[in-house]
Length: 246
Ligand code: ADP
Image (cartoon, rainbow, N blue to C red; front, side):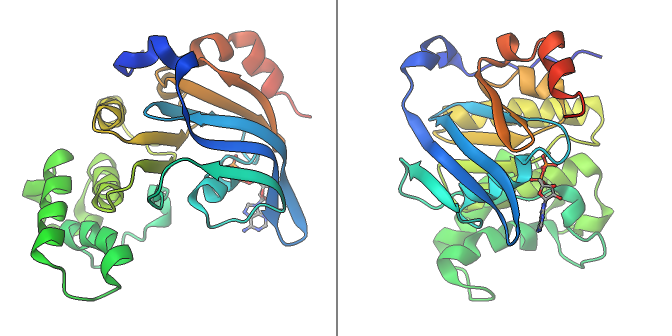
């Protein structure tokens, strides 16, 4: 099934866009394990960018670098924004057994400002309410995460990201494993967030989601194999080349 997502309206000016993040000759990895090698790349501001590449190509590591949790070993990372990024982890990384309600999950998005377990202010609670409503899950606020469908849980995690009120939202595989309707809903939502002033970056295996992004970074073995308009970049021949064993 082909899923259509609306592109952000200002796509036509993509070339004129300023960058929200710029990487210059950036290398990064884990102790004793270099992963990303000399990346020169740009994340356009107020657009959706898809990070695409085979398993192990470095998508999650790049998200970690953009989130500021993995330090580059060399090269430069320039952020044009002044708020810390919001990182939405993979759904699988969030334990189903945790007895957290949807509201508690979203409230954790305010901890960066308030500190864990501190009393939230009235303004914090209003921000949480707005995020719940924005994601259409206000009626699920008292439900436990573990009782929800994959799509609903993903929306709770995105709401947690939104509650951080960042202008840069980083998501790791937000549509993987969801049914087509839930994928479409998440995709449409991410596009809408751009209109609200958010720059969205998602690592994804979902080529339909990637094609509907405004921009794409293609990774292979920790190196940049291409960047630009996903429709032009994600051709059958490029994908065959990228997915071939190195
Ligand atoms: P992708 O998201 O594209 O699947 P990753 O960024 O997760 O790729 O992984 C890239 C490489 O980094 C893989 O070879 C993986 O084994 C390695 N890697 C990922 N996380 C760690 C870690 N915490 N410590 C050491 N190596 C890691």
